[in-house]
Length: 387
Image (cartoon, rainbow, N blue to C red; front, side, top):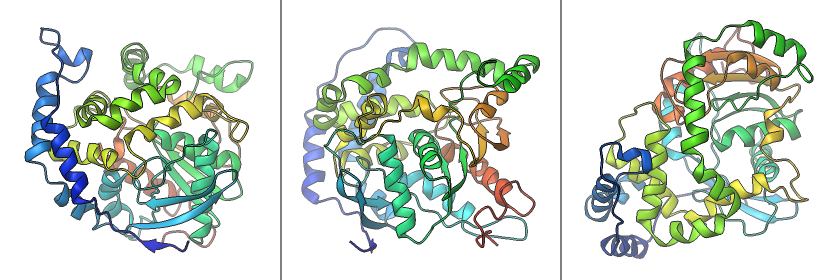
């Protein structure tokens, strides 16, 4: 399949069925008290958003805005899985904010060609029902897409699952992936057995304010925010029934993360419902999006690397790290040196897990600094320096 233009067009019947499901939704009660976010998305908030989704929110308006982006699709042959249909851009909303910051160059800032694929099982890419489509297969999909588009060498940027996918691309395709920038820094504490110099530096370097406060943030996530991951990593099919059948369940499931994982970002109702609607109307359905958690923690013979291996040292791929105070895991800067040849690190005063949407200028600024003339990654893709 050649690369073709793609237009998002959700059928009218799908919109009608969504409205019907929302009109028939049954809601639970909840604990009394003030700190209602402690136990999940508050009932009053979810009811209000569900009502607006039913009779106020315009998917057609959101759809038209998404279609203003240059959307494409193609088919990629994945070893052991046949052809996978891939659509891009992927995380539509985040790309919407980053594009105008990165597609124009000036005397000091490079311009980028941006390819933002929807991963298989997400957005308008196809779904994968065969077991074994783990992180390495997602990386293979993205790598082969870049080759098909004519980019034999490239750089990557990622957060959330983009951390694992971009790291896997660097692990498997070091001659092609020349540099990576990540904003979810899942580095582990250095040990004297594996990284003695980094461990010594970490032991002798006092923690700054971000790092000290970040310890509490990381502990909160492990103790109070990680339940979704355990469920999706062990029984994705079970939670999938709720996500596939109930738009209210999907809304509550995603909205909780949008609230808890950001740095007091002032979400609008339209932003929230656009994010959730992309999951609801996705090609493979919302339940497919949780399979990656199972695959990453249960590697099959086709894909033997899981998330833990991607947190270690990957050589030859220059690495940039962005640290945000309200990320779900906050680590000291020194820990980042256990992951690869770090050439750039930044610490930002605000921002959380969805940094490309919350503070897009921070992500764009990092990339411009890394790849500008005189930067640590200038001309890392030979002949394509962005100027």
